[in-house]
Length: 231
Ligand SMILES: N[C@@H](CCC(=O)N[C@@H](CS)C(=O)NCC(=O)O)C(=O)O
Image (cartoon, rainbow, N blue to C red):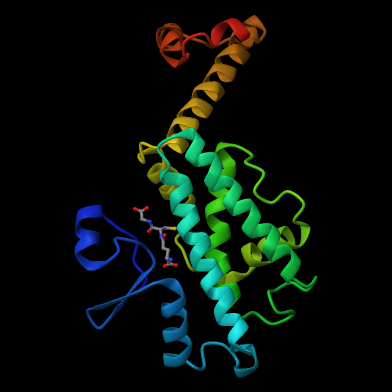
């Protein structure tokens, strides 16, 4: 079973590095995604058709590559300063550019067939769907093949069904509570959206104008210092 931390303390007791993914194998924690991938392929040889299995050692290397991307993703969302956030953004963008030069134009990593490398990049890309709700960080600039691959993976049933439908909301809430530079960006984006909503309501024709006293009470609380004068 792949598990998501219900509480960080409880999770630390089970996961030696305190990280996901971790696989519960009869009560033993198996951790590090590349190791988990290897274990799954060996233990469930029929889960993927034989021709979709790793064709060589290079696939293992690309699994490891996805593992380093996971490290950078965690570094990105937990960075406490915006400078560190920017550095992690750049590191991720460079990794996607490297992938771009590796990909063919076929839908999956090695062409027509879905392999374990694809199985691990599905979860990688899922993070970016939520990051991009916060801001366009430009992770995939000049990476059309990576973007096409990302789209193919997102459309695949097994990738979609690997998580519950509320995954984006839960990840978004997790990021909000990280107390990190990204959490600040998220909060500031929400304030801007609320601002826009209020301004739209104020500018709406009188018959459609529905702002009440409550709007005017919360309105100043939504403004970061100095933001109002730009509007
Ligand atoms: N190299 C590790 C990376 C795992 C990792 O960094 N996981 C992140 C999520 S992407 C995590 O659980 N971070 C702990 C946290 O955010 O508290 C692997 O591939 O398993």
